[in-house]
Length: 264
Length: 244
Image (cartoon, rainbow over all chains, first blue to last red):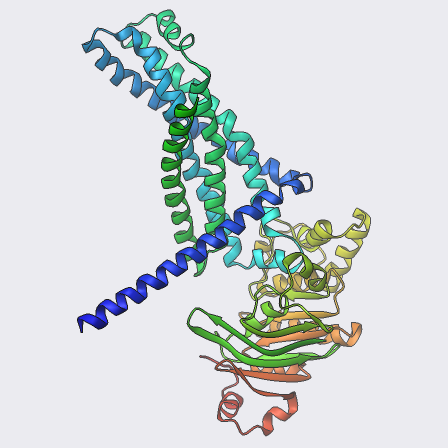
């Protein structure tokens, strides 16, 4: 009995592992296809502009709200901590580093994963379920070039300025908190920010934007493309896309920081 | 001509098609009849190269498409049009835009030529006045007619219908079947009609293949279906609509 039970477990594990590797292989080819169709961007420039609007201007409010609130929160907490050590004037330096290197891009990435990624997953999943993706293929249109490549290029283009906006608004809200809550002169705050920031601080932060754009777009789109099982299947694939891309963002965030900080 | 030779298809452990062979002649209407979920729609996807068989060959006009790459398949697919079961119309595009979409995507035609072809299909589908409507504003039968118009937009030699009357009321079903019949009469267009409704087969098909448990158990002229002694065919002739 126990032998057959462990045998069944081993069989299930083998099958799951095989399915996982097959899916990874499929994802790999899907991603390659999304990149090699970038030369067709001129043909799909309208789709690109639509996606740039969705990922960019339409996402601005959520990026602003999250970066302003995290900047303010960081300024309150770090300011209180620094006060204990009599180092409140270092608030600008510490918040700037946290926001520009880590929190600005990461929070923007997580917000876009939830907003842009979920939209991609749900929209493409619904198209898959209603056979619209099959229709594209059947009538001679490459669905990856038409649907995924414009999303990928739009994210690659707009995520960098969104990171800059997230960084600036986070820092500005931190400066306001420093001035009005901790009573630190704005000149002291900004003097602790800019002269001390070096190139690698910006490289760490801004290199994350294209990495996050690739992760969010490809993971969410792929999950939409493989959706099965009706509307419930669309829901499942959308959730999976957000969960997986958010997890990958956290991992990528760590490794990009580590790589740049160790090598610059 | 479309030929399937000893085609086998499995999804994981599930055997969908078990070494089936079919020949679909030009300018003829061939029905594939079988219960829901038996793999009838899969046959259409195999013919278009949207799915690859595990074994066997698929020939379109003598060309083996089984191991063709996606880019090689596009010119082959243009020879055929498909009407999906759920129509697969783009819900954010108007009827005119849906009809002209693939011409704009894949053909180097002037805008005037595209509009002319769209107008032809609007007239063919009797959808004058609905050019700027969205698919959600149309009835099931009208959507089906748009999907047929879209399938005809490349002027193919063969059209594939996936359950063309499923979910339609009797009047709309009759209109759609009439449309399918008129296509063959007027334009000599061949068709593959996948259905689980036996009356549809008798109304329009020249020949019929019956798919049951992954195998073709009957493949001959439609009128000879009554002569078959197979118990499953006998049961479907009495039940008319097949349920798994």
